[in-house]
Length: 454
Ligand SMILES: Cc1cc2nc3c(=O)[nH]c(=O)nc-3n(C[C@H](O)[C@H](O)[C@H](O)COP(=O)(O)OP(=O)(O)OC[C@H]3O[C@@H](n4cnc5c(N)ncnc54)[C@H](O)[C@@H]3O)c2cc1C
Image (cartoon, rainbow, N blue to C red; front, side, top):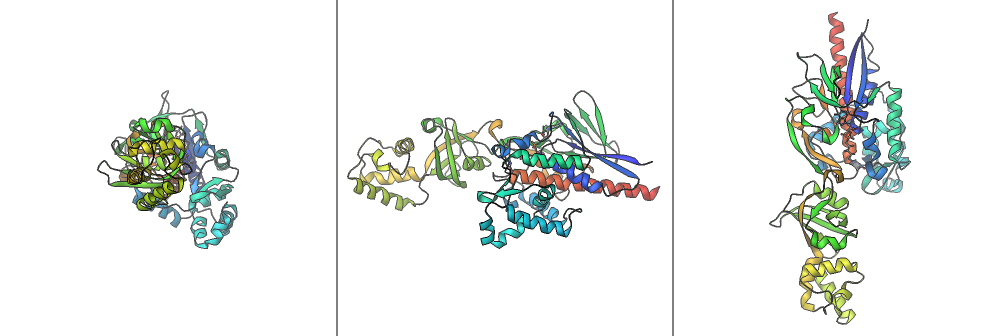
């Protein structure tokens, strides 16, 4: 009679579904005296709801050129991505890998770009996450800055291929099951006990924690170090006097986050959307990962001119326009509401005649419209969570806890986050695939040992 072992995946979001598919594929060919079932326990009434909300419903599921250096805990992430690349999907044949290469090239929206830069094509084609999705049947296109979106332009298209694979690979999905506590085995090599709301318990030789950024500390065994969590990748709250009149206005600029004494912490070129509480937009989201209350956000509204060139331009405009008032001077350069904010910060009146001597102050405000940062917007507005399970306690190649063999953690449950651009989902898939394969392989090794003893 065969023994039944379970790989339990707690959480059916991006990382959990990738882990389930990877685990089921890796256990399928094992055979022997051990059967292994892969079960996803999801608290919601359906899996993958978090995926549907991504990328404004379009799911920016990955990036054409993922750079591990962009992630928090970059060395850990680099190890995971390298290990994944070194151990391609055992089921993927050379011909399949080749078809992935051609598919990526043919589905990239900016095909001309990759043709113009052949070197950019090959790393994409060999990316294990992209190969995983190509194998599931997903086609995609590339947009600006390497962002990858499903060809159907709908997040549901990504979820469709994942759900199809779950069914084909025989993964059992149990929805409406909220795990409340994972207890470690009483003896080494024993089974984990996963306790659920309502009192039921599941026993599993391997457990993959895929509960996302809001994983509560109490869910995982006490032995695992757990860092305080805080939302990131969201809008910045700032002092409101300047931004309130600008609510809903967008500017393209270079935004620099500086510590209170003025030293720059980070800079982002891109769009800033003024809101009545602060600033939103991709540049603000990315800077929120580093922002601290008390920091200063400096918006360079004319990044194409350096400070001196900006002063010269202001004087030249004054000469051309024949002694204009301030508002007239900036017409055609900034929207009037933004111009008024700039004049205010420069200590000038927009309705007063502009003097040559005003150029240094105005150029200063144009090159560094300053907002005092109060903090990051509330959790509902943020796309990622910093903190959670400390990566130091995990093996980056397998995602397995060093001191708790059989316990794995993936995705945002770990203290990993990255800027916008498909990086966070890429991490969810990559870490999920790594853990799924490693869990299956650990069970196979164990089964092999037991078979040889019998
Ligand atoms: C609005 C929004 C847009 C985003 N857009 C993008 C984007 O376009 N590109 C990108 O790369 N990233 C994006 N992100 C970030 C990305 O969605 C996350 O980084 C990613 O989903 C993390 O995957 P995960 O599997 O770790 O967690 P999740 O996807 O959050 O999945 C966790 C799952 O676990 C379940 N769960 C939680 N607790 C329990 C429990 N106790 N028991 C059982 N189940 C449980 C949850 O219901 C959920 O299904 C976005 C995030 C948000 C909020």
